[in-house]
Length: 185
Image (cartoon, rainbow, N blue to C red; front, side):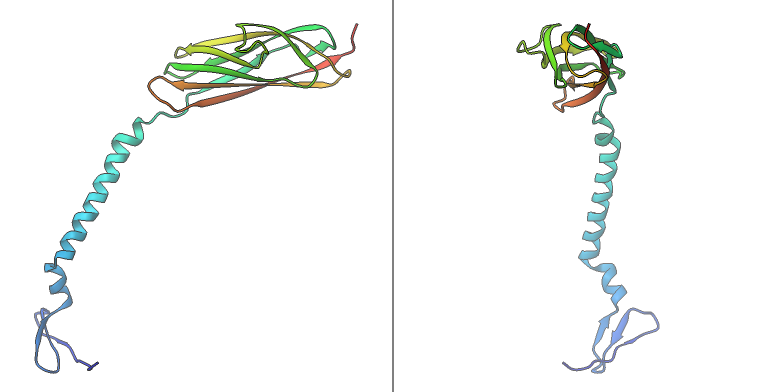
């Protein structure tokens, strides 16, 4: 390829090569090219899109409501005796919750007897709890028998699943409770 020498005139707009052919400078071509206009339009569209997302969409998506799950349980229980404990759940959010469900995980050596409200399948593991209003609370009372070695620590786990009204996302909250076993009578 032939080597060409370019020079700029005092106005900075026209460059001539060694053959004497006049060509517009880089800046002159860039100012009037369609690619410059298209680039500006695309960047402007991206900025407007980001602004729209931040201003309208991001702020209207729900965050996870604050729900707590706790246990009301004795710190020690006699092994082999009938015991009762309560799983408490509270909605600390300003939005109503729907489709609440409780899933219980019991330790080895626990025998379920009954609950109020009754469990879904009669085994005491899954409960349908319905709806929970904003700043509302509820509970499930469970009766059963713990067996094991003296001083053995038993850990219970409760997981509550729920949804916000008009949203399909499923959220959850987990709580644990523990107690130690005392020798049987």
